[in-house]
Image 1 (cartoon, rainbow, N blue to C red):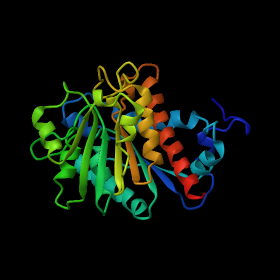
Image 2: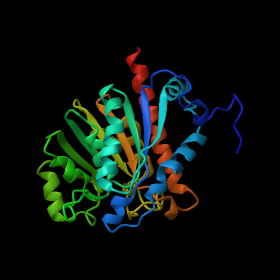
Image 3: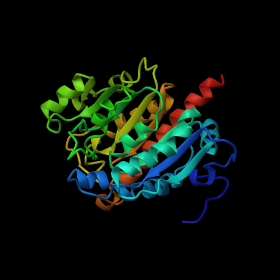
Length: 300
């Protein structure tokens, strides 16, 4: 498809157009080595490129285009981390790339990759940060032979010797996908919210209410029902409806305490007609829409 006319702009035409210092950065982490280490089905390494392609085709928010366009023009795509296949080394590379932007107060959006992305994302912080993880799984599994993987990022964050993980909420959990020991681990250090507790818009919004500390939000696409998100590492039966998922993404952008987000576990080789890829791109779009709302409200 060729470039569109000036009267029909797409995000690919607007991204970074301002040319000055960005307010938002996007960074890809094209690795699924942590999924392989966890015994899952690989494919998430192809996700950042697929999300960028689909996101670029989307238009600005037709209902309020001005703030959205202004935000996207001040959003810079940093490209991808040059991953090596060594999970720990690559997580440190991700952290080192993110750190200067987080310290400058720029909002970061990380495109994974497996959920091992989130531990590298967390390591980019030099200050205490709380974590909200939208996921069917708690992802606090024990390490394998002392090594992390796609199922362990939040155990690693909670047990990190820096003590910088100030709290953890896992939202969208499925009772058939969480071991009781892992549930106890989460409940002893934060909060576990099951999918059946998120039936209303208010129940989603409450997870962002009163947030004051820095908040990292992780979006694992396997939290969404497999009818709408088949192309993930571990498809979910009876997962979250798309409406609640996209509300959570918008609120991640709109909530002032949220300082960064990642979108993980998209597996394009297992997708059906690009369905999950489009959902991942729309998730990023909703985060940007929320950020545009936040930015506009600050100027009033």
